[in-house]
Image (cartoon, rainbow, N blue to C red; front, side, top):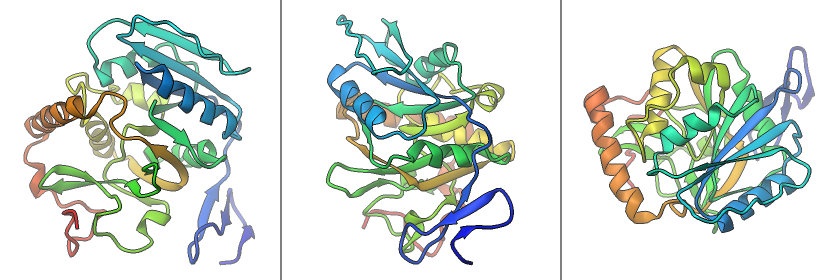
Amino acid sequence: MRSGFFRGSCRQRLIVARTRNVQHKIIGRPKVSIIILTKSYKLLRSCLDSIVSKTSYTNYEVIVVVNNTKRKENLQLKDRRLKYIYVAESFNFSRLNNLAVRYSSGAYLLFLNDDTQVVNYDWLEALLEQAQRRKVGAVGCRLVYPDGLLQHGGIVIGTKEIASHIRYDTNFYTGDIDVIRNCSAVTGACLMIKKSLFQEIGMFDECFPFSCNDIDLCLRLQEKGYLIVYTPYATLIHCESKTRGYENRSVGADEGKKLLLKKLGDLTVFNDPYYDTNLKVNRK
């Protein structure tokens, strides 16, 4: 299949060696509401600066939820519309994001960690072109550590850990992380979804305050017949766990997994349809 434009609403681009990306035409200029939870202005500033300087898509707003900090500092996002919501209550990822959605005016929602930084300029278009597809429920990106190693290339469900990120030390077919593909779940550190669908599906389950809220959302979307899509054409640096710290993340992860098992049953016997059973997902 040759490069360039071809019949239909898609075009393809050759980005990664020996792979081709079918690039869907974005219909109209839908507004994207980027929702960021934070308690660290230092992390937030780096995140916002990267959004402003490395985002070619212009129709977006940023809603910042400042949680449990006495300090109030409005970081001006140049000429972009920026909303601050100050919430003085215990951290609950699901509840705070659900709250922020009420203040959003975009047709699409992008839940984004404050400890991320944009890498490529067309990252928002790459997510949006997939999210606007009728059968797609949620879209996730490629996340890398500051040293460039892969941190997230989709999520595999049905492992000893209940669910695991495909990352640099996971067994996977060479090239899988370089192509757009379906997967069982994507991380909430960077997740796009239609606002109407998010509300229809019941939003984030607030019983999951720290972790597994993204996996629960993705599984509920799949139950309704929607696809979960990973795209490497949106790449961000992720300083994992800086948002709430390793200790809170560890406790929250255990609690989230217990809740997920209670709600959905034994996921360790789940046969992930998007991961080859001949491969072992355990870390190398």
